[in-house]
Image 1: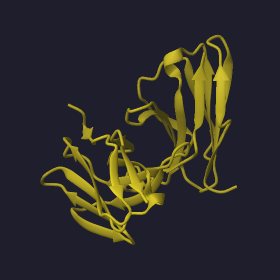
Image 2: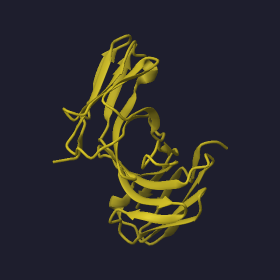
Image 3: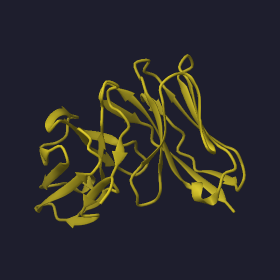
Image 4: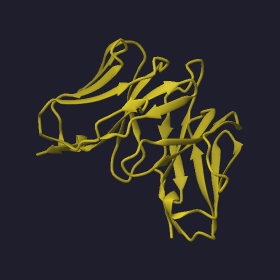
Length: 115
Length: 109
């Protein structure tokens, strides 16, 4: 596997379900990100992890719970979601260095539908 | 006012045309400027990454940054049907990227 991988690619869940999204990066990067992409809207940054520590929570509702057990893996745990949470969820990684954010590399995304 | 403005299109051009995609921004604190390409059902793919004002060329792609006008552009020469995608501009502020909404480009053969 190369680059950034995400599983599952598609997920349909009811509002009372609990599910998790998984992201793995094979680039040796130290920072990982979750984004939400809705139709006709800019990518919305959700969470940032640097060296496994959460450094950014962009006012995300608590029904989204991230977990970063090591620099290569990132999870997004979902529970009691709303239909408006249906979107493409993208994971990215970068090697920030001294330049701040660095070049971010994205996975293919998980298409989430909440029914 | 949005921090980054980008015309969503769609922009439709014939094969071989020169394409110009643009973004404007309001925050002088943005340091790095990027262009991503996103095909349908795929994640964004980094195309160009620039820091200073001026031009940066890579094959058929040229990225242009004008910090005084807070304006960035991506030019695609000899456009191909395979260039049909959504193009996202992005700008860095600290450890975060702020994205434009994306411009849909369609290149007709």
